[in-house]
Image (cartoon, rainbow, N blue to C red; front, top):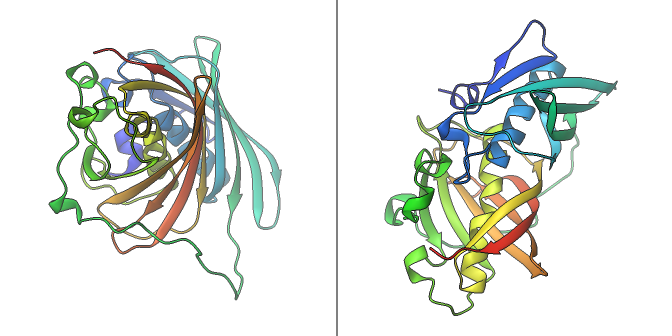
Length: 265
């Protein structure tokens, strides 16, 4: 199974139009499309339409795609250059705009380069405990993605005392899907779960935007989501996620802005 199978995205008529059925494996606990899945679906559509891999993509979330709805995705290839395509994808449900994704896609080569950040030192996935979540979030994407706690506190350990702004998770999709830009976009949206570790209170977050910036792709069963929260002020949080392979290769970076509320379970 690849990420297209997990998402269930389908091409319609030509390679500019696609549909995504919002099933229970793609939703938030609030029963609407998980932002990372929306961005991931748009990335699949953009790559299919352009014939090029993602360099970066940014989603702005305008409205909700509820459970059992169908989101229609239209791709526009604005500029097609020798190495880079500038493109946009827009998702609608029953004529209502849900998200807008802007992106650059393409490939190039250069004889110099490097990666100047280091992965955190954490245990291997098999040595990390599964992440246990409150029962209210069980009927959502979090029930369909295998997640292990690599760094930070579990929900049971959140006791009102502030903690570190850095935490980490190991994540993999069903069927051990090799990473792609779309897969990593899904994992990049897990940053909302890092807020509770920082503030010491159970929180819920709504993504306002998501950005994925690709570095390189290599086969890996697990992806380490190295989450670094930067700020939470006046109810809005922001941070970044470094996405690493099991071998310590930097695959991508993700960032997002979130609207945060306290969640009294």
